[in-house]
Image (cartoon, rainbow, N blue to C red; front, side, top):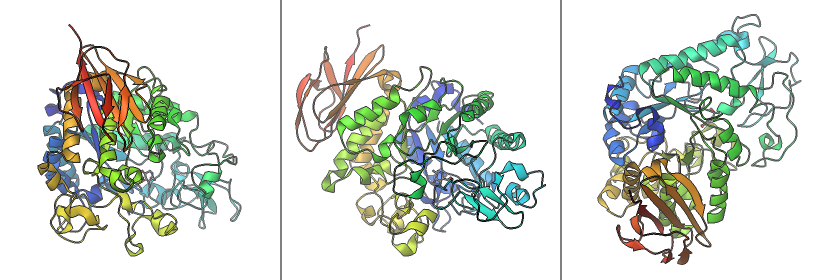
Length: 544
Ligand code: NOJ
């Protein structure tokens, strides 16, 4: 199945080579007029993704699911949910993507299953069922919780089961019981599910909440602590219900499993209360024996400030092990879109370009969330149309995550070219001005800027594999050097709406390679007045 891929450069390390694009399948393209995106819809859009220049697609879950958490509650790891299509469709997607040199990364949700997964149905059927210990059962007195652990989506993490008189653990919804990774049978069964997909030719996995996999074996209560939000979950330091030391051992087994196959990878979602780059980097192990990539979510709540950005980037990159590899992410299906987070009035378009350049030129693998390349914004969802269980529970204090999951804006026709019927979530009001079709035609669009950046990255050894060092270019500027043997690139980003003088301590002749404001090829002087929100790459060829 991988025959098309062997001729690509750096075959085994494709995931270091280029950009990975996250698709939320319900919202990308609807091919069968039910208002919900599907696999055949994704296939229709592969040419678009190839043209954008991505090397891989990460699909949010498409496995069979009762959809209490829109696929993050799996009831059959080998099945494809009929709302998205069939296994045949998915195999066709793998083939069609591979034919375009695009890899497929599946989302594996293996901290928990759905409560309707046959394993859990068995586990809860009696205390003596052989699968009882595949999940986490504790306590025997209703009202007396085994400990103080809270669920991420609210309330206690323990749900009483009347029939068998015990509590089961659910770190998220009660319809998402946590499995017991300490049980060897469960682990074996999970690894068999992973093997099934590896044998099918899947190129990689995104491991959902990977740092939750193992819990304290003594079930100690978490100590008090102040986290991110003023909600009960964040009034605990989560030292016993996640990030247990045994996790690294388990990840080394995962790695060994993937290493038996050619050119596969896994990227882990590492959840932290506060920006915690050290935690994400930790799960790379020594770079060869744990995750291939680990998301650091520091930028999901970083204020727009050049110095702050630099500090957060430094903190992460300094901790990446020598043989490890970083990645960069600004948006996903759980976070307010970066365009919305960073825009203040009419600055959004300009800031989006600064972010685009930072994302694509930073050392490591960039992740684009669908629509980020056209500057999609969060949509305010009326209460009556809320779908996300988090929004249903906490509206209006927390509107949930639907706002960042709205349909892709393909064109200006009714329903934005996403579907021929009313979609499952409302479409952004501005879709007639902001969509793929318009931006493909407009040379100075954000989409074309992304395309240029990605194309530049493909050609540039310095951007793909060069070293990273930060420069002090001046107030409100973020600047860094990426150096390889044959060339050096210097990236200069002006974070403000004001012109700024940049003073770069670099010698030699530097020419503009790509810029929001300057002509390609133009010489760039180390002391130069920058335009407001200018984003520029300058390049120097090294003498042979
Ligand atoms: C993290 C996922 O990204 C999120 O969407 C989901 O709700 C939780 N994990 C639970 O699986």
